[in-house]
Length: 321
Ligand code: FES
Ligand SMILES: [Fe+2]
Image 1 (spheres, helix red, strand yellow):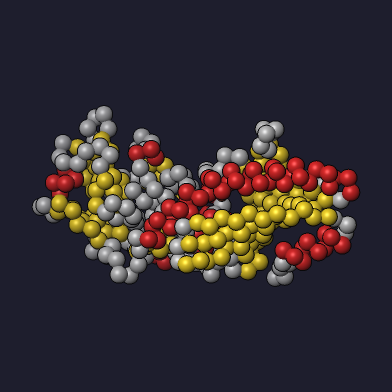
Image 2 (tube, rainbow, N blue to C red):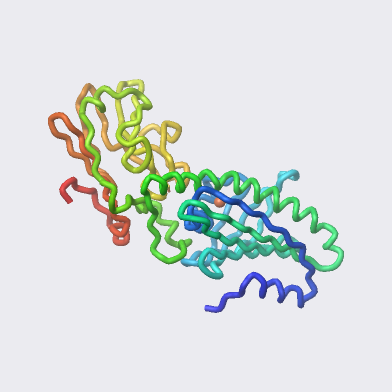
């Protein structure tokens, strides 16, 4: 497959008489370069996290995505369709092509790793136009900058959350060297896993859970072995994971729908792991966790095997597996 670099694409349009206005935006953040790459490849969040754009997907492969994005225009408030083709030129080097009337919009994002949990994201914009349309380039620049700021404000909490999990020995599985657009569509996978030296089993006194209050955190304070409690009006106590095993979103009471949590990143429905009514403990079978109850302890086991999800159908995890 032949791929054009950002500069060679620009040169083609310059030869065709286009003049370009260039600008650059840089952001240093507390996340890995892979988290920025993941965020750019993550198709589903476009329509759950971003409020100013709605993506209509035409096709995706591992490293190419073609969309028509319905983009809300700031200040004016209306929505316009914009084609978007996004592809990886090389590792941590993404190219976006779009057009808006007589304007060509070329964007190049480069994710420079500073260290394992710090990354510099450099985004270069080039707006191309011909003749009289050059006059409006400053306006297009202003709109793109404003839009980029809005998108970044919505994206950064996702990247930072992954940075936070990395600091407590969590990792994120990907099936290709760069993150894949196609891979991001399978939201039933558990791509979060613990480093080898971490224990994937947590044992808690049964009484701690029986006596827990609404909103209380159970187990670890954060991460895949952290849980939280809800108690409804009928006294039904439920224990939920406080990290989504798909890609690490934080789950809490705000995500609660009647019978499930709705993950804010990609809308996965998350079931409770345990329900308790009148001190009767009921374990709910789960694909990602297995739970064992003894006289005075409750043990939680996380599957911690992202490759397991390469083959369907997924089965409930047994504690002794
Ligand atoms: S992080 Fe993807 S559905 Fe929760
Ligand atoms: Fe985003």
